[in-house]
Image (cartoon, rainbow, N blue to C red; front, side, top):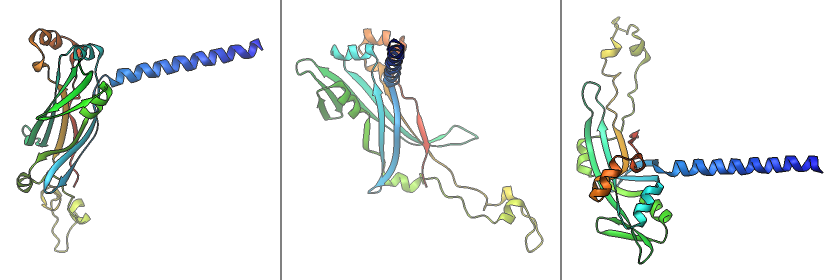
Length: 227
């Protein structure tokens, strides 16, 4: 019996330690902003962005929020045309400013986006909604007409042109100069969300700029546009 009980206790301890490590890693991963998914679609000739982000606040930021200091987040979206010979050409750029605040009297968290606001009973619910960027109109049809935003399918090319084999007339084409071999431009979309430290109260702003705990930024999440 003693021999059997020891492995059981050891196994239970291992399971407990493993669960503790997993919980710790989950909390560490949740502290910050991460773009989980982002896609574009055309609705009524308007380019619409739908994205989901995972947002977690570090203890110092959450404590400041619960003391009544609002947090201002900026969601940034852009479409670029990569150019190897110069800086990328920015085709579309737009922003959303969303404020997260806590009201001690009602014990509710509030999200404010322009004139719209939503109340939540818990911080997790508010952060979940903050990370849902749905039906965001990022470009009008007029811009789409002027700038094709989807990567084009490659043109059908005769293998003889690619390898440079002689044609029927005996001439050998130069594949790199043939217009059939060229592909159309590819455009790249980008999404980013960050905590706007410039909107914090001045005394807190100085400490936040010097602390890594306040560096809440997803960095740019980029993807090529579908044909």
